[in-house]
Amino acid sequence: MNPMVRVDVVIPVYNEERDLEPSVHRLRAFLRENCPYRWRIVIADNASVDRTPEIGRRLAEQWPDEVYYIRLNRKGRGRALRKAWLESDADVMAYMDVDLSTDLSAFMPLIQPLVEGRYHIATGNRLHPQSRITRSLKRELISRIYNFIVWLLFPRRRFQDAQCGFKAITRQAARELIPLVANQSWFFDTELLLRAEQRGYTVWEVPVIWREDPDTRVKIVRTALEDLRGLWRVRRTPHPSPIYTDPEADYPD
Image (cartoon, rainbow, N blue to C red; front, top):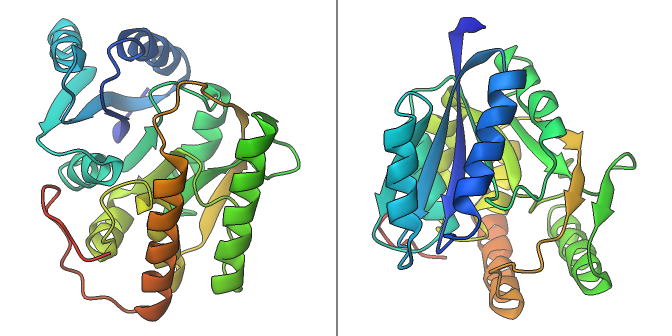
C-alpha cells in the first residue's frame, strides 16, 4: 500500500435501503484486494426517508476507518457530491452509483492517471468501442441523443459520454471546478465536465462494462428538460464566478 496517497470513493444515495449494504460490502472487498492506496468509502445520503440513514450509520460504525457516512437535508446527487468532495482532504475523489452498474474493473484505470498527475478529471465512457453495455433500446437512444445535443452546443468538447455515473477528480481540480457548477442534481455530471474543459482540463475517459439498473430513480422527461436548460446556461456563461459552494442552497439553473 502507498500511504502517501488517499482516495475517497463516494456513493450518493437516496432511499437505497435495498442496495446500500450489499454494494458497500462488494466495494469494500474490491478496494481491499485491488487498491494500493489508502482509501475510504463515503456514503453521501441526500435526504433519504427509508432505512438508508440507519444502514449507512451502522456501516460507518462497523468499519470506522474504511466507511464514512454524511447526511444532507435536501435531495440531489449534485448536492451530495458537492458536499462530499469539497469536504474531503483525499488526493483523488471518485464516485459511482450505488447499484455499481459500472463494473469495478474500470476503477483503477479511472483513478491511476489522476494519482500520477497526468490528468485531473476522469469519467467512464459507455460509448467507447471497447465498452460493453447492457441496456434497453429506449435508454440507448436517449443517451445517444443527449450526447449528440451536447456535441451540437459544444462542438469542441472532446469527451464523449457526459452522464456516466463513474467519475474521479483530484483535490486540486475539485477546489477549482465545483464552485463553478450551479446544478445540484443530475446535470451536475455534465456541467462538471464542460466547466473542466472551459478551464483547460483534458478529461480522461475509460471504457467500461456497464449494465442498466431496471430500478433506476431517474425521471427521464424531467431530467431531460433540466439538462437542456443546463446546457444552454453553460453555453451562455463560459466564465462563471466561482461562488457555488453550499450543498444545501439553490442556485440559478
